[in-house]
Each structure stands twice: as C-alpha cells, then as structure tokens.
Image (cartoon, rainbow, N blue to C red; front, side, top):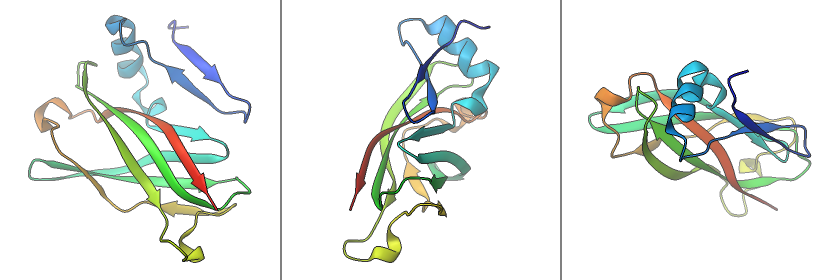
Length: 145
C-alpha cells in the first residue's frame, strides 16, 4: 500500500528493497513499520534483532537466530544499515552475528535450533539520533560445514 518494493525469494522468505536514491520513500518505510526491517531470512536461517544496549558511545546489539536449514551453519554475516530517527542513513556495517568455533560441532547452528548471538559492539552511531533504533538487516553471507 505504501509503495514499498519487496524481493520474494525461492525459500519463501522476503525482504524490503530499499532504494537509496529515494530518501522520501525510504524514510516512510523505515518510520512506518521499523520492526519489519529488524528481521531477515535466507536459505532457512532467520536473524532478528533481540536487544540493544549502550556502553558509553558504543552500541551493543544482540540477535536471535533460528535455523530450518539442513546445513550446519558456521557463519552468518549480516549487512546492517543504521538510520536516524528521521529515517536518514547513518552507517552501514557488516556484522558476524554467528561464528562457530573451528572443529567444535556443538557451536554450529543446526536445523531446529534457536540461538542468541553474543553482543556485537558498533561505534560511530550518535545515541541522540538513534532513539527509535531504526536499522535494516540483510544476510550477506552464510557458510556451512
């Protein structure tokens, strides 16, 4: 209804397509339903923002991960775009939200499991401009064993 475009994927998941040149549409999407941008899925792996905390000037993010993939996932990399409370892009950063320990199979993300990431620290976000916690997640890379 609001003119937003979505990408429909073969694994029955979807994500918003955000066109950076159209800042008015971007701001309306981000501000209208920000909770839709804080979750993403790809190839049976779902990542959602679980919590955010501040430690001085550093922003700590924790994510929930769920797997319906038959692969044993050892790395989930997420492209994270941060937006100001008015919907303008502040920063883009790639975060390793899940990273298994080499040769420790119990650290792999397996089918049917729900796990929480460690707290990932991000610098360069102005706390006064990020009160609404607006961000967009997109899984950029998955590695499996």
